[in-house]
Image (tube, rainbow, N blue to C red):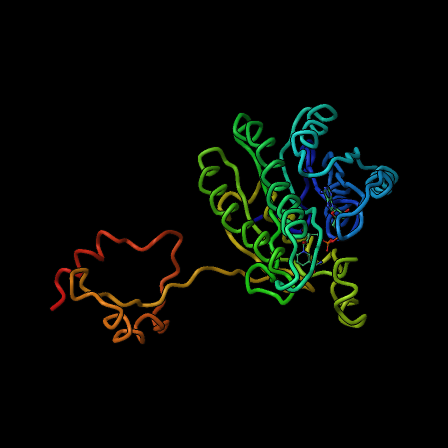
Length: 303
Ligand code: NAD
């Protein structure tokens, strides 16, 4: 891959939720590296209440003052087609989509209301879908596209009080893995990140000394690498990133139990092989389901 001075001249980058936090850091970075930037932000509270054009305007001004090119868009990501349209109307193209916008509606599952569940899914799942769906025909036509979707440790591992957010964030993983598969033929690359950074979203749940070491700027370099034209093969991957640490996560399959699929196959036959179900001593790292046809053949040979 190219060196540290990656540039994006002539390309258009759409960053959703770019009025603050991580999105602002991405937008300012791309603006400083030659890209045209669409700074999208609805400008509401971190719980998804209210709207304001100020959040996006401030970032556009900052990019322009530094000599970059940027335009604001104030639509909710639920109307992704309007955001992509802003890119096309102003810059004639879209090359990179950073699905970053997000909100929280934390509440224990016992107290979860449909409104908390629905709003989180509207913004994170439908929002990412609508933006990518609107960009997709452009990506396919020009045989070029780079997508970053934003998951979270809460989605990958679970997190108390965040069932709605966890479900919506893990959805980004499946979404990205499929976009990567469907996009491969058209030079469309999609990756998903689980970031950790100081922002209004985390400032109430982490102590100040920890937050000091988690600048949003330190998530930017990975996003820069993954969305650059020099990245031709890293796609469909899950990254954990924050505070200068970058790691990849992947699925792991245990040895697994193989039972004869006939009348002898009972709950007891699984329990008898429970150790094999849990045996990760020689794992596989699959990017698709187990080969069931082959396993069926093997099972037939069992005594
Ligand atoms: P943030 O609150 O600073 O930024 C999110 C931005 O999205 C805000 O500016 C907000 O106005 C905007 N937004 C919210 N709903 C929108 C909508 N419907 N349409 C357009 N814009 C909307 O928080 P952040 O920490 O920078 O979060 C960025 C992303 O990273 C989110 O998807 C979040 O879930 C994810 N994330 C952050 C962390 C972290 O440690 N900060 C951890 C895991 C995941």
